[in-house]
Image 1 (cartoon, rainbow, N blue to C red):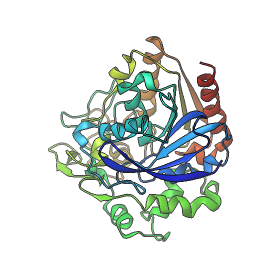
Image 2 (image 1 turned 135 degrees about the vertical axis):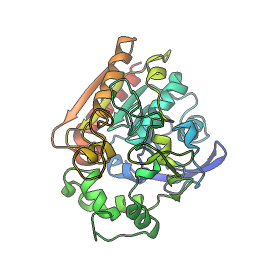
Image 3 (image 1 turned 180 degrees about the vertical axis):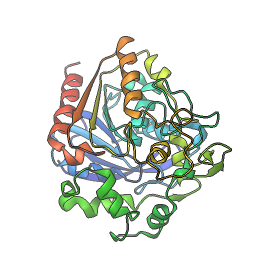
Length: 354
């Protein structure tokens, strides 16, 4: 399957969209993750059948879509509203299409928000290493109980400033652990060899990330609680923070519940119960000083939280299945594409047969 690039005016911004397959094909919507773009789906498209109509947008501030600001106080709603506007944009899907929606990482949170806001327009949901329904960082229990009143330790203040600076500078080297190429190899996949000839394509995708207070990482806010930072009102990492992104109850209460497939690798170091991007877990390891201990600030059980919410979703009338890929990291569609395609096509077949 080969893709073409389109630009679409939707939700007040110009969105760049990657499309493939016939307009009347079975609709599939792919939503990329943080510090990437729709180009991250390009290796997958070659493995998909021509019977599908695939639409993969660049989210705002990524790829070639407008660098529009992200209002973090709305959680991931800015992204979800942009994507929802594409469902009826001329030339993308057939009228009234109900696509299977696959979301990777941050894109999984966007996909969940789309389900909550427009459940009648989602035929199935494939969550690939998704952010917890309680956000990223700052929650201690399976029910999303906050670690501190202001969810300290979350948001833009937790970003590595050298990584942000290298993104902004377009650093293509592998010098040091905070270069985008090194992060791609170490965090996005468990086995860097799985990137193969696509490594430079994926790196260029990462480097399209708009940096600054309104985009990645966002505004940092001081907190009296360890480690001294909390979620601010602007930017991507703050939009992911539990103070602003918490939709577990809304998802469980959705009046229409399409089937959900959750695909994750057991070697994921980003979305994990022992995430190397969770300041509390790094504090437990002694990497971040001053950690107050597990009673006050335990690591976030991200995987356990997602499982608990999906179990509630199923008990309320929906269905879900969890697919765990051994030895796989944060990007199953890159590392284990055959298994990922099989799960995606299973949802597609269920959609095609009603």
